[in-house]
Length: 412
Image (cartoon, rainbow, N blue to C red; front, side, top):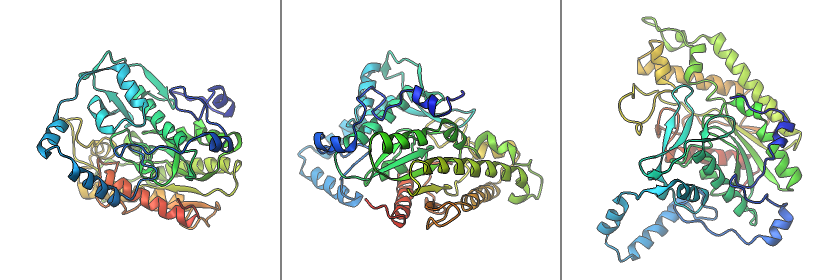
């Protein structure tokens, strides 16, 4: 679906910083600081944990609390294993809109679905447990992002608003599923939200081309800084992956021939053309952001060496999916796992090579104060599927981002 383009089109959307459920628009920081009470701590199982201790400390605290409980462990396990009761669709919306609702309470009513045509991830409603479920989409961000995804974004927005009264530094994030994985994983931004207050525009499945076309990151950056008088400490961008994987791989992969190696199966000229486009889109976005603040640190990255999976068809939708890398390669006759992995390494190294033309680890490349977060080798095999890390993998990615933020002079 075509998106509205240009800043006038964005303004016509009457975009607000407040949650998409219709809450009031956020006030400038000075008045908010006077009127807003300090944000209350969220439940420990909420995705965002501002002001919480480190993970080991939090785990120790939970362990002590568990030791004090009088309920036998068997009883607790039985309660956890009890089937979730059916609920009405309106009740599900209320639960989703409430940032304090634990993910565990929502998980039985939702599942992640990947569009086989474009690889995009969305949340779907478990109609076996949700009565009167309505299938209409919110159409948020210009493609079929369903109502559950929109409400999850509202939960993040509500958390952002609740923390404007404290001194937590603000990060603006625009990106793909490495910044917003639908619900069931703690992604990069979830982890960064523990130390920072992240205003996140990201959407699973978003392409860099879509981000540049929508101009959302410029629009909201301008709104936060110029209209709301908020200080944004850094901008984080995650894009390009969805511009290269899935069906896009047909543009540069060659059919397998006996004895061929990974480099023989990539049409380098065609792949370079895609990288040229990605580089140009990044430069466009960055230059637009610079018109709002010419010195703000901007962080970009190029993912990690993902691992293509064998055929997952017929194994159930809850198993890791292979439609981004493994399936497109098999369609070209490339079935050897070693060669598949080598192709991914060439792809990722090529992407980092392009990012390195305008960004580096110290922010001293062609575009000043644009920092490259090198996540190669960071996930270390902790993959949820062939494109997304596990919670632990995402935590390592977030720690890498935070390390580069420190280099950029941005500390919690």
